Image 1 (cartoon, rainbow, N blue to C red):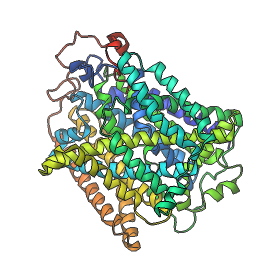
Image 2 (tube, rainbow, N blue to C red; image 1 turned 135 degrees about the vertical axis):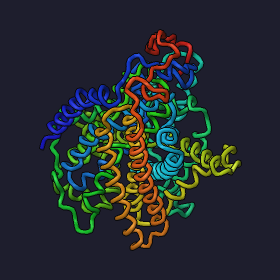
Image 3 (spheres, one colour; image 1 turned 120 degrees about the vertical axis):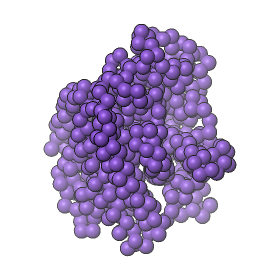
Image 4 (cartoon, rainbow, N blue to C red; image 1 turned 60 degrees about the horizontal axis):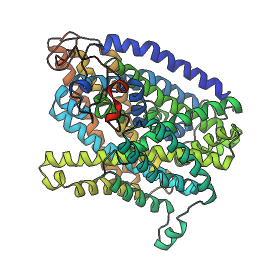
Length: 600
């Protein structure tokens, strides 16, 4: 099957999903009101709450939600065949991720841009808020552990990527300082930053850096683990400094990288006329994880991600200029994530192998497929770039830099969010030092995923991705389930039909619960006494989530319905603050006054 044909079909389906299904959601399910005064206008402070042009906000939102997960997950899932993987990516993006991301953004905006965790307490009950907090803790722990290993493995396999990635840090800091001091737009400096970053690929190729000698001197068996420790030491520092110093300017650079990577994949496929070498449905060896439910858990962010609800309700809802912009920002952001996942499938099936025999050698079993997923994506994208006359050695470093940049940004954000969660847990538990001591909270947020990443078992590949990735995917889907439960209750209370929200909610709960039961049995049989209790805890949270969501929905159906467009609790009433205050894009608000203007 020619890869460009598959890409074209998926592109058309995504277009139709946005054109028609997101319009249905906007009108009939979420009842968007162009007259509603968004929190960005109601609480405009020039810092967090900033009315932002929808195209600029989309760039921030897309960059924030797109990390290494939609790359690695689909590259693993093609183990079951590219047909099932693409089917779930397309269906999940259109009917699950779009509903989830769009809905989380709208509900947050209707409740003064509160986070989805806080909304769980308000819309469902206080227990749901605590449940959400614990789930997020596990999710961020697994995200940070897995992504650290992804980066460590890529540094070992691609030493030429070390210099570009390391020097991107001072480069981003310099760009941030320039924007802050000159109060200029971020567009031109960030483009210059991308050009400098790619010029550093030439330097990295000429001077590759390996830590094999240091690992041997320290008596560390796997060089990857040295990188893991260094990465967490870096994030301990990075998570404590203001976001405008490093995180935001690097976000500017990576936003361009994201679109460049998608462009390289699309053009490379067209020019190279690459053919998918993998089977549509793979005859997996005996003893492999079952297609149901693990394909849906493995792909995770490539189809739907609970992490997106944290971004939608954490920063994007504070910058929404008009409520009607939520359709473009939220649903189209999910489509962008699905497009990246599609590119990962094509790279791992059409770009990485010249024949099915070559592909079979890369995917002989699930452990090998899991451990080699990131590398397969890198090599596949490198081949697409090579089709565009870019030398293969430089193309490989380019692809590695793209993946590492996304993963590192996710780690920065993940550790920072984990610190917030640790402090909130400390507050709820009455542990004042944990709640108020920044150093202690940051250390806890770093040490727990560090230990998880360094746990032995299964060798270089199988343990981290074959096991931790499944737990990460499961926890991520539970987070999405809770966010959808919040959205569903809000929709019912507004007197509208919640079926579009309930269908993906039920599907996620069934798949995650099924996967947790199977994994728990496997962990106990294998004597994995660290992972078995963790899986059991997550399963209890899953059951708890089902009960809380069901009770909340039953209560919502029994309560008097609040018609769309009215209601005292943020269900639909436009704010009375200033209907006369016109919504305006950030460019017309004097963006010279602020160095970031929401472009984060």
